[in-house]
Length: 107
Image (cartoon, rainbow, N blue to C red):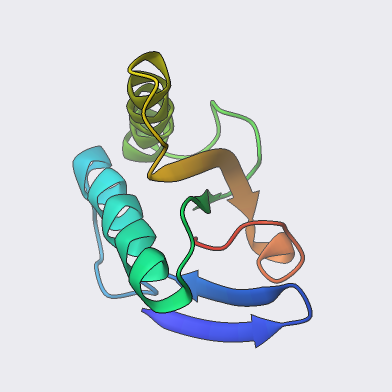
């Protein structure tokens, strides 16, 4: 995990190069763990989570990233349907050029 602070607040990057290949399930687990980390350290109730990818469109990237995008959307929607406070807010893909310029807290 990599943490930095900018004018918008604290930003955490999960799995900053620690794995060569990840499954979609890994990406979802990273988001869940990161949201719990932000909740315990920053006292946030719901972290904005972005998925680092080659473009912001849902169909960009390799198969596992596209699948992770769908699974993160489904995960958030499941919580919304239960009318329970969201543990994380998936904001979609984030391009590398926008890593420090976006409104997310976890990447």
